Length: 374
Image (cartoon, rainbow, N blue to C red; front, side, top):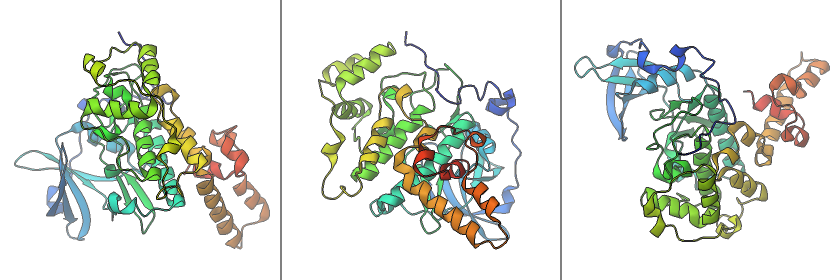
C-alpha cells in the first residue's frame, strides 16, 4: 500500500471552503443566451473538446467557443474568474438540439509556441515563466491543480506581453490524501508520480510540468523528455535523473512498480545538466537557470519548489528588478506624489505581503513584494 502524501502548501483550502465551492456535481450553471454568438470557423480539436472562433452579436467581438461536456471545468473557471493570467470565462451557453454546453472565452491573439519559443531572449523566457508562475500560484491558492501544464495551454500575446493559462478541462480540486486519476497531463509533461501510478499527488504535479517547459526553453529541445509511450517516458526521465534516485523515491512512498519496467529501466547514473549545453543554447543556460531547473525536476514531489517559492528564486531577479524600476519611474513621474509616499511604495512591509524572510528581498530591495501580489 503506497504511503499517502500531503501538499506542502495550500493543503486545506478546500477543507475550509463551503461544499458548494468544490462540489461541481451539484453546481447549478447559469446559462447564457446562445443566440448572442455566431460560430465563424473551427480553430482546433482536442481530446475532450472542439474549439471554434465565434463572434458576439451585435458587437462582432471575437470570442473562442469551446464545445464541452464536462461540468467540472465550468465550476473551476467560475471559481478562478478574475485571477491573474487565467483565461476569462465570459459565458456558458447550451446547444438547444444536442444539449452540449459551450464555453465562451476572451479572445487572445496568440503566437504559436513553436515559432515563439525559438526566438525568445533570456530575459523574455524569465518574464513569461514568471507570468505563468503567477497563474499557477493563484490557482493553487484557490485549491485547484491544473494537471495539464504544457506550451499548448499557455497563450501568449507577444505584442502585449500578456500570458494566459488556458484549458482547464483536466483541472481538479485538491483534497489532502485523496487519490486521483493518473491519466492526466500530456505524455511529455507527465510527472514521475503519474508514470509510477502514484495517485496521492498534489499541486507539485504542475511544477514538474513547468520544469519540463523550462528545460525545453533553455536547452532549445522540444520536448525535453521525448518518450514514445508512458513506459518509455519514465525511462527517458531516468536516463537524466538516474535510476538510483528513482528507486529511492519508490521506496520512500512504498510504490509498487509495474513489472514491465524490469526489462525497460536498466541502470543509469544521474546526468549533469551541463551535458545539454551546446553552441545554440549556451546563452540561455545560466547557473541560476540550471539551479532553478534542478529544483523543479525532482522525482520526489515533496522536494519540488512550489509556485511561490519559484517566484522567489534568483532566476527571476532580473524580472523583479525591471518591475521595480518601472514602479519607481512611474512614481517619480507623478508630480503630486510626495517623497514619503515614494518610500512607502518602494519598501512595503514584508509581513504585510506574507513573504517575510524571502531571499529575493535581500537581492533586489523590496520589489518582489509588489510583483508577487499582483
